[in-house]
Amino acid sequence: MRIKFDTQPKYIQIETTIICNASCWFCPQKKATRTPKKMEDRVWKKIIDDTRGLGITYRPFLLNEPFVDRRMPEIVRYIKQDSTAKVEFNSNGEALTPERTDEIIDAGVDMIKFSVDGIRKETFDESRGISYDKVYTNVKYFIKAANESKRDIKSVVRMIQLPGTEEEQIEYKKYWESQNPTAVEFTQLYNYPWEDQTESLKRPCIKIIDEMFFYVNGQVTLCCWDTMERGVVGDVNQQSALDIWNGEKMNRYRELLDEGKRCEIRLCSRCDAYKNLDFESYFKKRNW
Image (cartoon, rainbow, N blue to C red; front, top):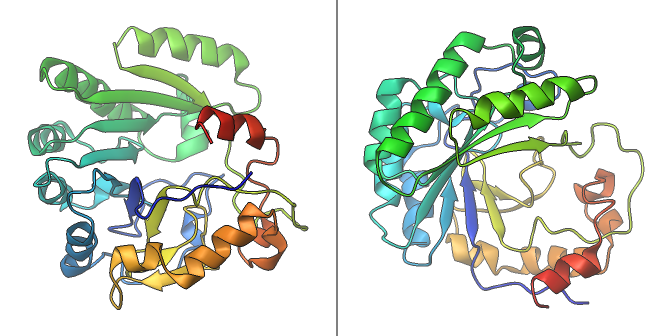
């Protein structure tokens, strides 16, 4: 079955900074050495301007914690000048103070997914390396403020299903459901490309169907899990976002992945993402 691609992405991730306040043992973020530390204002504005009016969902983060960037309320407001746009975040919650929550709710945020890996302090401390108390205070404040805003703001609290935390996951679900978020979820650990993989899979990939990923320097990568710039496909400093999306390199990679030829793409040649996904059922659900 051929993968169908639109002439525009549905989701755009923008790495407005490469900085993260956490030190998660399972994340390769500290290995990233690209510069600058913060994306220039003209670059993130160009990405947004290039794609206005298209019903895009913007996610102003990539391999970083979005709320260490103090410009985030300004960035949300700039995005939401487009009435068709939505703004979503993934956050560990520590830098999202109550004051900043009030600012981004006022700016028009649509969703935040909080990564809170543990209800027990010892589990949380081992996984994230940030303040348990600050995170719990900040996340609860956001949920309450979002619910009281009367706007359609979704709040999701997520825990990675770490080994040995099966009983804790029950406690976690009960506790967070009492706080009335939109959802409580449990996720699997990511297996980033080139971390442990030694051979290629003959499988397609769904990451390139409708998502676009911008590094802090304006380069575009094939995948959000590309820690070390192995899959760069363009540069918004030199091209428009849509020209990159519809460009020769992107289309060539789509063809290769559609045929399951991960081995011919450097980044994908050491990636086992979606190794157990039933692609036929997935595509049927998308009415392909």
